[in-house]
Amino acid sequence: MADQVQNRLDEVERALLNRWPETRIAPTLERIALLADMLGSPQLSYPTIHIAGTNGKTTTTRLIDTLCFELGLRTGRFTSPHLESFLERISINGSPISPEGMIAAFDDISPYLDLVDSRMENKLSFFEAMTALSFVAFAEFPVDVGIFECGMGGEWDSTNVIRADVSVMTPIGFDHMQYLGDTLTKISATKSGIIKEGAFAVLARQEQESATVLMKKCAEMSATPIREGIEYSVLQRSLAVGGQLLSIRGVYGQYDDIFLPLHGEHQASNAATALAAVEVFVGEKELDGDLVRSAFAKATSPGRCEIVHRNPTVIIDAAHNPHGAVSLRKTISEEFDFTAIIGVVAPMADKDVDGIFEECEPIMSRVTVTRNSSHRAAPLDELRGQAIEVFGPDRVSSHDVLTDAISEAMEQARLLNAVDDGNCAVLITGSVVTAGEARSFISSLKGNSR
Image (cartoon, rainbow, N blue to C red; front, side):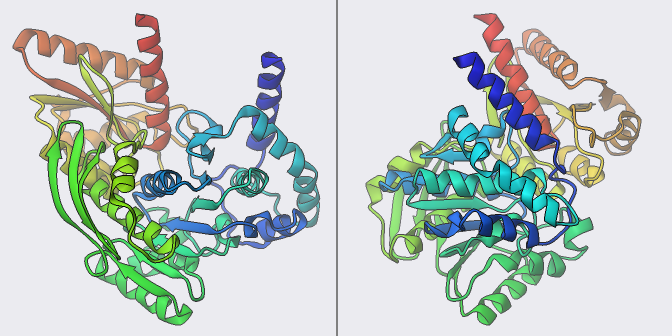
């Protein structure tokens, strides 16, 4: 029976992957709106929270989910992209949807996917189909709250057919500029499209250009802005073993002695933003402090400055643009005390690779450039040349295969630690795909060592 389920799940995944990849965009809500209408608009059958921004979206979404679940709500969480399994994208009560649940949801919507395809100039994409699957899965469960992370942008993102009670905007930076525009003003205008009439808009700290656009959109939509640094803020932050200790001033109360098992100042900000969003969502009131502490103590954010191995220490981070690499650099330099760091970097070709390298250079003693399995991976020769420009030729090496690069970096770190009695670590970064493949590989090493 287990084999039958797995075989059917593999068929479902192949059918979804045969659609347009999520990196190929034909910006419109026309297809997803028609599909949702044919399905009976399941996304309107439960309250929703909607999260957009450039960096921190997935972590903030996960933190909102954790808080809502701790408060006793049945939760549905939709995030993208996934690290290791496409089931991760649709979570119910904090856990990935079961294979049986995914199969049932796909069987429900499959005829409608074909019908929409027949009526539209462009067929539904992988991301649009996954979004529809989450709509149906949450309605079938059913959930008390659907928590949706935008895939890209906001205004025409497939998730934007929900009617969110609370819209959340994490920090906006430069990414996906071929679709969103080449200025923060243009990018912010597209992302602000998730802000709904008369709803709450929880806004993390932004650059001035972005803040101006978002506040204008709030005024146009008669939405109530809840701004980091004004309506809510991180009051105090100190490092702790395995994370950090926070004091947060929420919109309606103050929460002290919060242990967050995540690293980085940006994660403290994500926690405060999540807390403010849940406060306004559950009735514009102060939350129970013990429940908040319990929820945040259980927080996880896989692939975000995540320690996945000891001896040597191996950290993976999904930073895939300079904005994310800034947070990574600050976190590593301020919260860890490594004697050396060997970097393994495998970015996508359509990203600001030079910007990523420039942010990583101060914290990496040496770097190995390599490729993940994606067809979008940056060409190795170009990558090596770009790395040499930033790090210099003596600090750069290259490997065709990501897993080989990781193995060699780990072996070098072990040798350095043995010879110098030091604390050399391996840092793997460059893209979400890289983080996911590295995570799977490290996990397999642990399994083989048992």
